[in-house]
Amino acid sequence: MMKSPRVSQREGGYVLIFVIASLALVAFVATRFALRVDALRQQATSMQNLAQGRLLVESAKARALFWLSTRPFGLASSGFADEQPLALDNRSYEMRNGAWIRVQDARGLLSLNVPQRERWLAALIGAGASLDQASAMIDILLDYTDTDSLKRLNGAEAPDYAAVGLAPPRNDWILSTDETALMPVWATNPQLRQRMVSWTNVMRNDSFNPNTAPLDLLRALWPKVSADQWNLFDRLRRTAPFVDATAAIAATGIPFPTDESVHFHASNELRVQLWAPGLPMAVEYTLSILPTGAYAPWLIQEVRPSDRFAAPDAHQAAAKFPDASKDLARPAPSAPPSL
Image 1 (spheres, rainbow, N blue to C red):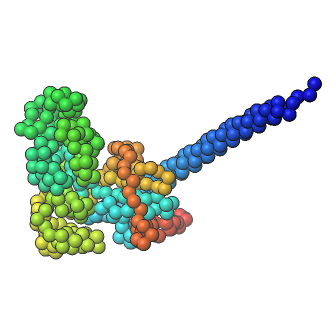
Image 2 (tube, rainbow, N blue to C red):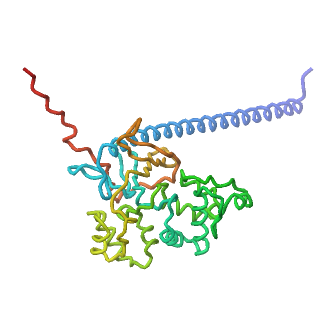
């Protein structure tokens, strides 16, 4: 018995709908699969770039440590007399492998462990703190590092930490600038704290080197000095660093202290920042150069992530990391044979 034309047309319509739905499902699955493959490819590329960036940073770190541990330190740089010096004032250098490095003399920063009150008050106010905030932050720093439980006027001890949900102070030397996030007042002012972290070190003395200090920190410490004087000081110290406060005062008129708290010479304690393409952030090392170290002529005290610093744009001349003296690469003359 033959089906009527109307029934055949109805069944043909069902088949068409089924085919279209099947094709749509296949297309959806194929699209999802393609997107997944593309995401995996991008992830693999990102991981490859990250691994390559880490390799470049490790290579750059090795070269920088070799340079710093085999060269004398001067007023604001490291290097032999016949070499282009490596500046220790946080300026950016490009390495041969494409990594970027900045080296900051710790003496050009403020010590968290020995906060000189007058200097710190000026810096905190220059960073945006009120006078009351600045006084409290200094007292809290001093209470954090001393070994007693006596509270300064605006300071904090264990009960004050507990009242705001913080662990008690360690009552010992500060080992990392990030420890300020564990202190009352400091913890509730993250922007101010971040600004101060870039100006601070964990040295155990308050010696200060204006030759290598950030210019914005200097402006905060001596707010009455004019912009023209600071521009002159910055230009002169970049070409020929000052030997002492007397020379700096004579050349610029800036009233630097002439006592031992200001020392126009780089220290052996450094902050080194490294970044390479492929890394989301820079790597920051706090280290000391120790020629008589037990295991190496340097000691790395802390490694932490740091905000990535921007490379100079295409219109700006990039400073290249200095090359070693050619005399160092020459083989030593062989001794004549003994008779």
